[in-house]
Length: 477
RNA sequence: GGCGACGUACCCAAGUGGCUAAGGGGGAGGUCUGCAAAACCUUUAUUCAGCGGUUCGAAUCCGCUCGUCGCCUCCA
Image 1 (cartoon, helix red, strand yellow):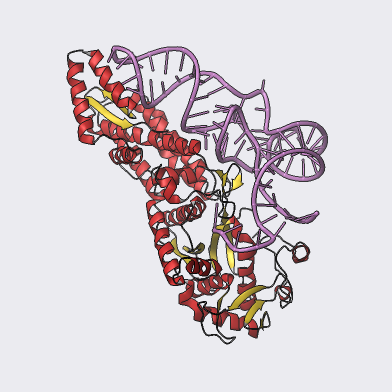
Image 2 (cartoon, rainbow, N blue to C red):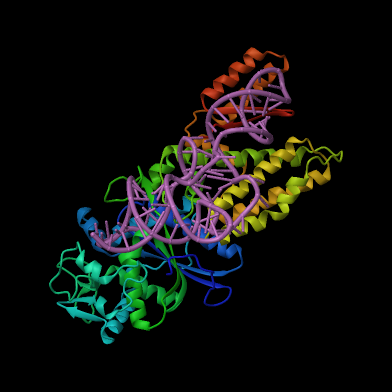
């Protein structure tokens, strides 16, 4: 609310109530929706990892003008439209490693709660009914604009929306809309109609999280008017502060412009996942601070893929060492790794505690990656060395687990890359090629060995010759 | 027009008052290797859009200028 970072103090110690605006289920989701979901998934996971008891509510708007329009266009019902795109949404989110919210309320399951809320506002004089519509009277709520830092007078002056003569002010917004012939409708004290958009979040958040709760999130484009209106409705009704901390994620941009339906410059999650592993998309979304804009492009996704590949390449090396390390005690150049191992969690926590700075946190992960590589390069062996590497491996898993990233085995990663890059060679065929090349190498038939290697390289497969065999990976980037 | 955010290397991106300006990608050179790949090492911003100011000290605070974007209409 201050527009600045503040220390996080939940209403109830150890407990976090968090409400995040989900989607309006009228079409498939694009990368912008993914960002919001991933960002708040990370926030929830990190809070839980730090021991908070988090209750996460994420709503689905399943009745609104666009859904009605879509249903008319597809000659079906709004329930079908909303149901279909809600399912698509969950499918996309699951692929991206976004966990389900604890409570996922639909607007249409809470009509009664919304009507009660609206009646409360009418009773208190904050809302008025006209011809079956009910509007919230913005002038009655003196703090209107406090979140978006807008002055209602300026807004009226610059209003671009068609002025509805029946409203007392152009800023007044609908709590309840009278339904037209043939539209879905519910009975209400004002006649048949349906809820306005903003009221569902007020009614459902207070039902599940209470009148005041800790965190409310959503895309930056929801700040005004959606979240501003939620504050007005909620605080007018309860007289209590609605939300402690507002968190808004920045936009995905394409050529520096906001990715959006109306501009038509959007890429659906499905399209993107046809070319990239979901983990790449997740990493990409975490590679910048959640409030900053992120420019979408193949170049950036390829860079994300390379970063993840560096991670898994190192994990492969770590696992290799743990399995094959010699018995002779030889600890070389371990000081730096040990030091980083002992300070790593603090560094990671500090980064994440500072407004969920995932970009910085990822930086520390790659510092650890470099340090363990350096250590392995120094040719250690023995139990102590092994223990250090195991400790590194466990630390990486723990942190990856907290963020739900880097959670595969290197083998899985390369198998998935093979699929997403559509390499037309089975792993069995590949192994045969490698064996064939190995026989050539044993007779020092370098020409044949190199020919096979080049052939595979042409398909995007990279071979690594090691002491005790050859491993393969898929070229990233 | 009103309000707000941002501008860090070739690209992406942390850093918001004080040690060598994280990390990833890319480039150059090297170590290792049959050759590679991977990894590691060295190097690639004496400087943080520009100009002023505050301070012992600023990328970081303040002011102005330039540029980019967003919100003010549905939007993640």
